[in-house]
Amino acid sequence: MKWLKGVQTSFSHAWRGLRLAFASERSFRIQVAVAMVVILLVCLVPFRSWERIILLVATSAVLVLELLNSTVERLVDLFKPRLHPYVRDVKDLMAGAVLVASIFALIVGLMVFWPYLGIVLGTL
Image (tube, rainbow, N blue to C red):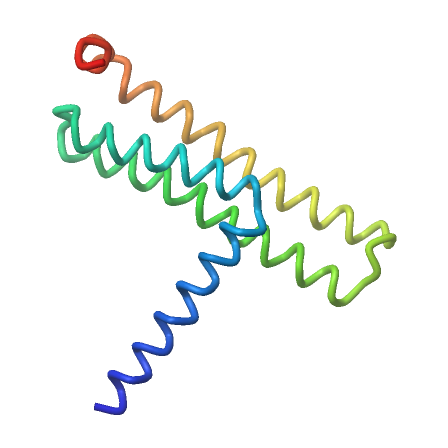
């Protein structure tokens, strides 16, 4: 049962990380709110299975990248002073990665949702 305690500890640390990101990162809170809307629509709209999967993968990719972005930001602040030009570059590059993922997730979402728009608007 020692392995169960280890798994429990790992989950505890992971939830702490998510709570920390939610409490300290405005972008993450916004992205979680959008993810909740996507999840709600995935449950309500009669999407095909592959459409549900695509929407959930795109949504989770944005959230994971935002968590990585927050991690890298904290790491570079730890190793280099905030004024170092490379710190700014690293942060901007990570933010760019999140932006690219967000734009493509939006495009994917629009492509999947478009045929169901009448159903979605009819249920509001």
